[in-house]
Length: 382
Image (cartoon, rainbow, N blue to C red; front, top):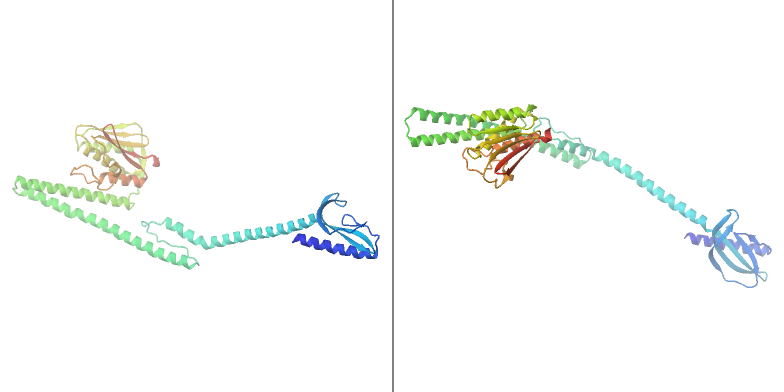
């Protein structure tokens, strides 16, 4: 298109030169824009590009050239007109560059305008999302959301407030029900045990009856222990142990060993490789040690010693066994038991796991050299 414009300009200039020649045949032209010279015969019209030295620019320039012979007053004149091509290309480049620049600036403006507008629109959503992430059903504070002019966000906030309120109510009701049931079970169990003791002591009963009553007492005692452990798990879930303090764990473990020595003939050896200090509730620390040691005593081979080991980051409790557990990955699950011991509730190690999860400790089990080894890693809290 630009080339056509240049050619039109050349034809127009040629026509002007022809009119001038009619008035003044002596004109020679204005190099390098226009040249006129006499020729002996007519030549065909030619349009081409050529390089010509431009005195004004003092360098070679690219021109589009039109040459044609014109007969004037019986003589032939070769008329050559030229137009600089470079200037036209510069104009085209300037137009394109300006257009691209305007488009780019418009894109940048629209991008930041859209970004700013989207941030304003979505800001309440992200604020509410952050509050929802921090929401806890154990908190007494009500969940509130930033209101939004967007209808969909407003409806979402309304439904979330309704949903979280219902969840908190259901959680409180379930918590209260669990606590009430666990508490109320203690009294009838104690009464049942007292009545059995009265029957055994005040009546002349046979050995068979005594064995049955003794078995019944053991079942009641097991129910009481099961109830206490379930209450403990519920309390941990309800975040009711918040009296954390720095404990000298060597001392806690040593006291637990001394207490259990009065109840068992199994020898428990304590090896203190390092001093261990842990931040946690003291009552839970005692329960953690007692459960690990009690589990080792229950499943230890009679007459073999139990070893409790304290290092800078961990404690280990080792008891002797014949074979490894068949499903070690389930050992910390509730009510999971691989032995048939009647005094086992299947909750001891699950309580250990629950306490570890509560504080971020890592419990583990492995079997090596005919020994069951339970380890607690406190490294994440040290």
